[in-house]
Length: 127
Image (cartoon, rainbow, N blue to C red):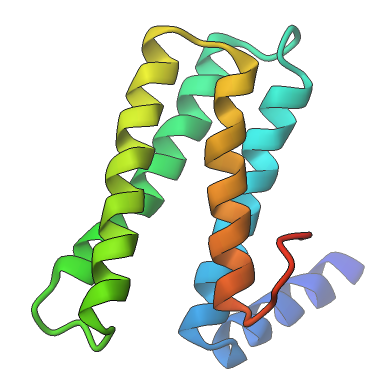
């Protein structure tokens, strides 16, 4: 019964959260998943690394598409910065896939945390 309550809460939270909150939560979740792989580097499988890198890449593909859309309401400098970060994320992702090292995940983790904090209007990236 408690599980159904949790599901109901999640659905309500999704319905009442604004787009920025949803994006921040998604980036935070990606950062946490990347951190988990980094923390368990010797125990994680290559498939787990590839999976989380691909999921993070898809999230950033969405952001890139959103900010490069002519109809984006964001100011041009913000759009350019997000697009540039997205390009870096893509490049770093492929570099990690080609030559996996745990410390290479740090930049992806930090960027996701920083952007999530910014979306929440926070000066801190502690999430």
